[in-house]
Length: 72
Image (cartoon, rainbow, N blue to C red):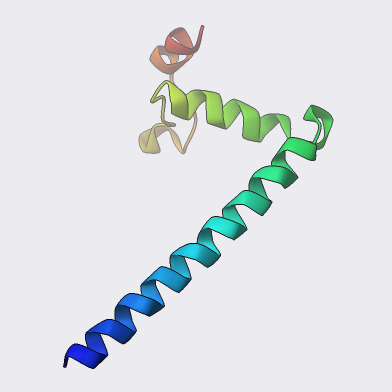
């Protein structure tokens, strides 16, 4: 039981280390990308999410007037 726990803890540490390395590589890729490489819609969606503006489901996923006022 103790041996199994130690193995699981080692496994978690290894996976965290790999995740940190992959995140670092991903951040480097994002830094190399220029604005022109990123879609405008993704940037707009990120801006809307930062202000907690969600497309209303009852409008078929479109923004309503209140959302547009919040954006402006």
